[in-house]
Image 1: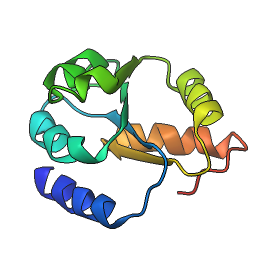
Image 2 (image 1 turned 30 degrees about the vertical axis):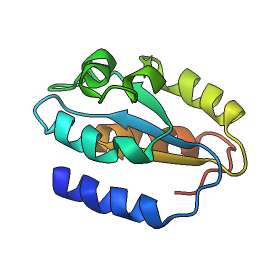
Image 3 (image 1 turned 90 degrees about the horizontal axis):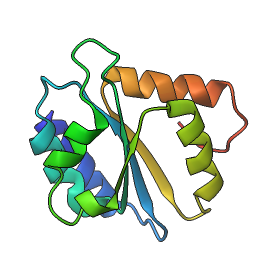
Image 4 (image 1 turned 135 degrees about the vertical axis):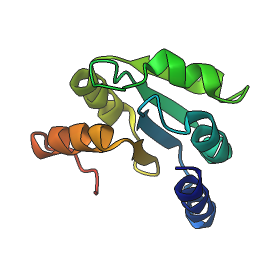
Length: 124
């Protein structure tokens, strides 16, 4: 929700990230998508948008990208195959980078499931 996104944005402002801040995001289409993404856009360097259209009420990655503010939209990748794309993201993330996962419980659950089956060094 927009209120939680504002709190998260404030926390990110206080966090010393010297590398790239990546956002892995998938949301349900009946949520306040434009408001949430707009609040967080100034804090995110690279967007990784997940397609949740196979989930009831799930938004597509393209729908998420369409409501990103100008500038952020150009720094967004749309994903449909979560496991493959997370593995590729893991290969490109540097030691000073931050990977932030948010959106629906579906998104967080899928990423947590992937983390449980891999040996990546991400912290939950």
